[in-house]
Image 1 (cartoon, helix red, strand yellow):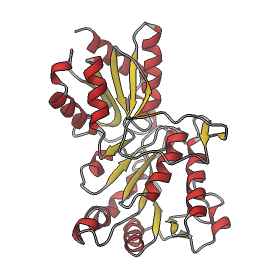
Image 2 (cartoon, one colour; image 1 turned 135 degrees about the vertical axis):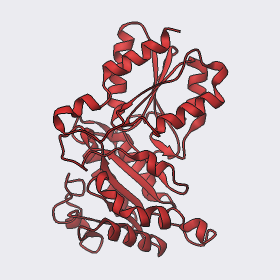
Image 3 (spheres, one colour; image 1 turned 90 degrees about the horizontal axis):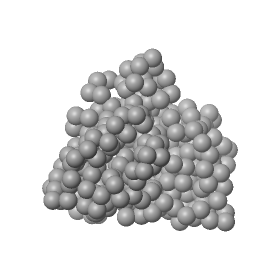
Length: 335
C-alpha cells in the first residue's frame, strides 16, 4: 500500500495536464533514450496540448509527428523499445486505440516472454479516456478491462496531478509496456500541489486517499473525483469511509484492497466503464475469495451502464455520480 504523496517545499500547483507535460519534460531531460511519437504531438502539442513546447525544447528527432495511423504508431514504438529506446506514444483518444491492438497485445505484451528475457519492451502508450467533455462517438471510451486482461501489460490510470506526474515517471522507467490512461475530464478540473522534483511513485500499488472504519470505497481514474465527493457526503452524516485509489489495474494490488475491506467489512467499487466484465467484478471476486468471512454485506458496484457511451445530452446520466455512490454505501450499511 502507498499513501498519498506528501507535498514538499518544492510543490507547485498544476492541473493534471500540466503534470503530464512536466513529467515528460523531466524524463526527456534526464534520459536521452526517451522519445515521443504520435499524431500532432510535435508542432501542435497534441490535441489536449499535453506535449506543448517539447518539440521546441528537444527537437523533431525526439518529438515526432506521425501519420493518422495507430497501428503504425504502436508498431514503431515496439520496434524502438526492442532496440534500446524508451518511446512514449500518444493515441489521441482511447476510442482510436483498437487499430493498434495487434501490436500491443501480440507483440509488446509478449516480447519479454517470447525472447525468454533477452529483450524487454520499455514503452508507454498514453491515451485520454472516458467521458465528461461532450465529445462525439469513439472519443469517450473506458475499456481499461480489455488491457488489464492481457498478461505482460501494465495498466495505469492516475486520478490527480501528483499521481499523474509520479506514475508517468515510473511508467517511463519501467522495463515493460505500460498502458497509461489519462482521465481527460480531470485534465483541467483543478490545480493541486505537485512535487515536480520528487521521486516517481510506485507502480503496482494502491493509494489510500482517506482512512475510515465504516466501509471501503474503491475506485480509480476520473471516478475518484465523485468517490471522494461521496465520502464527504457520508462523513457529514457521521459515516467514515476509507477511499482507495487502485491506480494500477494490472498488476492489481490485492493485498491493500483485502486488508482494508477485511477491517471495514463493507465495500463499494466505483468505475466509469460498463459493469459487465469490468474491473469491478475482478475486485469483487477477489474480496469474495480472500475476505469473505470479514464481509458484513454484499459488495456493491456503481458503474457505467452496459451500453455505448451516449451523446452529450445523456452523458452525465451515464457517469457514476455522488448520489449513486452514497446510495450504494448506505445499502451496504443496512445489513
